[in-house]
Image 1 (cartoon, rainbow, N blue to C red):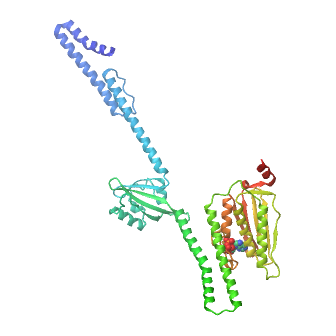
Image 2 (image 1 turned 90 degrees about the vertical axis):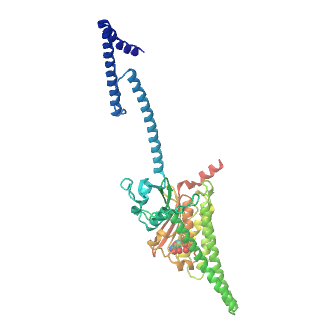
Image 3 (image 1 turned 90 degrees about the horizontal axis):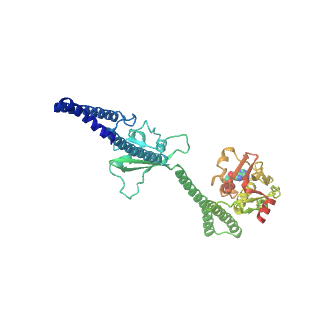
Length: 457
Ligand code: ADP
């Protein structure tokens, strides 16, 4: 208000002074001079504001102006600040959006209408071996050279894109070659968006492909394992139906048939055990299991199998079973019993008559405990050891079948150990014997006395 009054006074003063000095001529001259002065002042201030706006209002401080131009400056600054806030908020949003795209476990590549890479996230760069900066605006066909991808891309480009709501199956490619084994398998899909643009999605399906291959192998193995005894059984049945057999021959055939049906029964039982292990929740951490009882049950089983196998031989197995350990376990008694029994029975089956077998539970220095079965059997060559606990893996197929094995015993033992947080350790030397140990972690081992006290409480 004061500044407006002052401006009016400065404006009036030359006119009044001119009028006082030289009448109306002086007043006119004074008014013209005051107007010219005022215009020059406005022009100078306006130029200052313009210069400030031109030189980047964000970086340089605004000129110190009052009055009308000060007001203009104030409103210009306010508008600029509001615009800046808006731009900052948008930039933050964009950053959050880009961070989300980067965090995606799937690869994302944005392609322009010509099929050139506009942007890709780090996952896509790793999947396809792109360099996110260097390969910008490169045509996707120059970088992903798989002919199947080229055909898929061309089909999409010619309008073979799926109708909305219909699944876009995409295809599976081998990804960027790395030292990793097995090679990276990628499920790749192209989705159209915007004007002729496309979104390329990639997903690592290596584990899935591996699981699928394992499932196929497993089905093939099970079919093979069942088909063999079934073929033998069918052959015997046909023989018995077509040939006139005496009683002794008939009995012999029936015995052989029984052995085959037992083999199938054992296989089905082991398959059921495996599927139960895979489908049931992890063993409880509080259910008490007495390892002494399990040891005793295994010993009885092993002695009767050994007596059966060594019935025709002069020297049976020397089976040494240690006393019950002074600790308790927590876990699943049925699972532990099945794992222990598989190890002991293998030792009896693979160790020739007269050989020695040692069976014991013991504490290890790190607080864990192991159930170890040591035999003086044929031993296993080192190249077989890493694969020994795979389903249906056998060192010597014909011998294992002869001894009535299903090929699943060690797979079950390893599974049980892992479900209890432990592991299956195998040591073996060809011609000297083997040692199979089921190791359980310290959290599953409890002093017998402390355990019974805590349970009473
Ligand atoms: P199987 O039912 O054939 O015995 P397992 O899974 O129990 O299947 O064992 C896998 C293979 O490991 C066996 O076929 C056998 O070749 C080898 N094996 C297991 N235990 C012993 C052992 N104590 N001594 C020698 N070889 C063994």
